[in-house]
Length: 271
Image 1 (tube, rainbow, N blue to C red):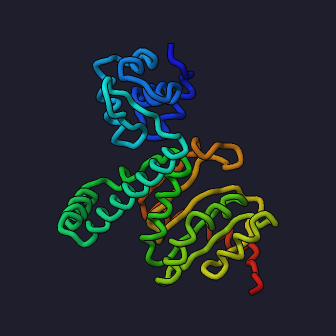
Image 2: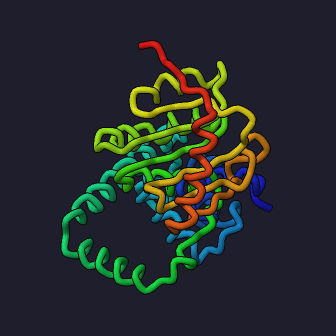
Image 3: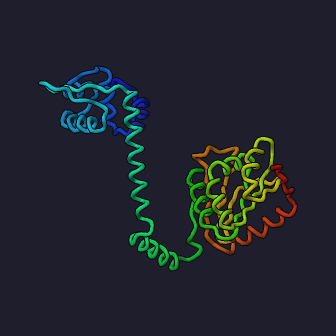
């Protein structure tokens, strides 16, 4: 029987540990100092695996090997472990970002672009569509659309959606505006999202769209992403979007948007 509950072990995995590592580490924390054999028995981890697990924990900075015989291990203070994990995660992320940055302008990226271009040309337009599960994934795709837009962006969203757009996409929207992209946003305007309106006003034309509940983004009348659910009724993890790359449907929806846009109240934001 493990000294910790299964739910607790699941949370411990947030430290970047696998199941055996989580069990051994928590067992050592409960003892302070212990041998591999003792930890194997306490944590219910096969002895044949315990040494490999302990070596891995030592490399990650979770434990220290005590000098002497028999070999024993000392647990590092959990607060110190958090700092070490945080530092390692940041270093790994920096290295990964640096590696990806070097790919820009490289022959590898040129070859990948060529493969993608040739592949897309062979695809039927009806096949260039996809479902995006979770709001996070949908927003990643919207950000890609914003960054690739050349002429126009149309965004229809909800009261809370405008707040999220200002938070998540502000940087990309500013860059789009700076390169001459016309940005139009329609949504219900309330006291709750007035700050978001003020933040977006310098880079976008915003109109108050009452009585219409819709969530979609159209880029250059060619590419469309629309959400299938009311954001007030769904958890972000279960939100679902559909992305379509088809000029016909995107242009048609933009034309329908124009009708609503003409009837929507334009906002005048004081400087």
